[in-house]
Image (cartoon, rainbow, N blue to C red; front, side, top):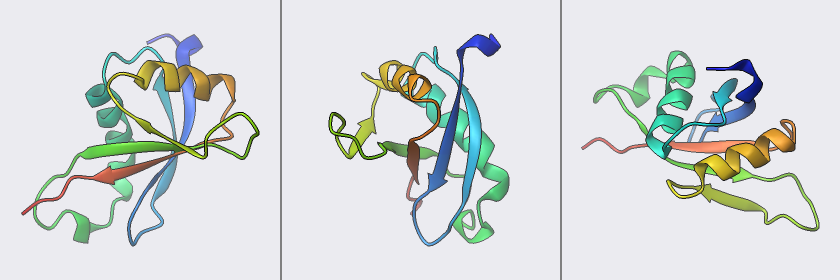
Length: 107
């Protein structure tokens, strides 16, 4: 992983917690699954234990909350088809935006 392609991302876990972190993600990740795994690995030590009582979790959804702008929407879901493009845009905007993530539900 080249440091030239690392994008700083402010991520936070939605829900009843204020869990957040700043992570470096390679903008050339090949899939949403790889992107989500990278974010989860960084957040995992900070996730409250009550989220993990039923077992290990994973990130199932991620959204970018864009800082206010006349040309950007307020929010964009990150999905398989746009993960690389969103990461490149996040890199160009130099860390002013936030990525919100959801953990999967465990029955």
